[in-house]
Length: 200
Image (cartoon, rainbow, N blue to C red):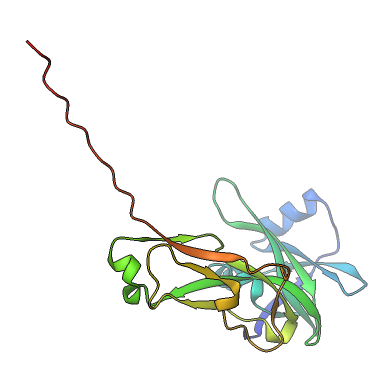
C-alpha cells in the first residue's frame, strides 16, 4: 500500500500560459487539482520534493496530501508534462481522492528471482509484455508494485495475471481474459556466415 506524501503548495489566481510562465520564473511548478465534482484549483508547488517523488518508481500510484492555505487536499498524480529539451517537469495534474474513492490506476510490475529461472539460466530472455497492470481499488489500498516470481520458469513459459497474488480488494481492470504479463523467450542466436573463397 502506498504511503501518504505531504507536499506544500500555494494557490495561484490566474490560468493561462503567461501565468504559468510567471510561476516557473518564480522557481515553482504550476499544477491543477480537479475532480470530486469540485471546481479545478490552480496551484503552484515547490519543485524539489515533487521532482524527488517523480523519480521514484510508482509515482502515479502514490497518494499525496497538498496543503493549501491551511486546507489539506488528498490527491493522486494523474499527469505530468515534461520540458522536451530539459526533461524536467513543467506542469502536474492531480485528482482529488478520499480514502474510500474507487480508482483505476496502473501499477508497475517487478520481477523476482531471475536467477532461479531455468529458462533464463539456459540463455532464455525475459520478454515483458506489460510493464504495468491496470487495477481497480480503493485509494487507500493502491499497491506500490505487483511482484512476479520467476522461480522454476523455463523457456516457452508464460506468466499470466492469474499468477499474480493481488491484495484484497484489488482487481484487474481487464476481467474477461487471463492476459499475459511476460514470457520466457528462446535465446536469440546470430549466426555469421563465412564468405567462401571464389572459385579460381
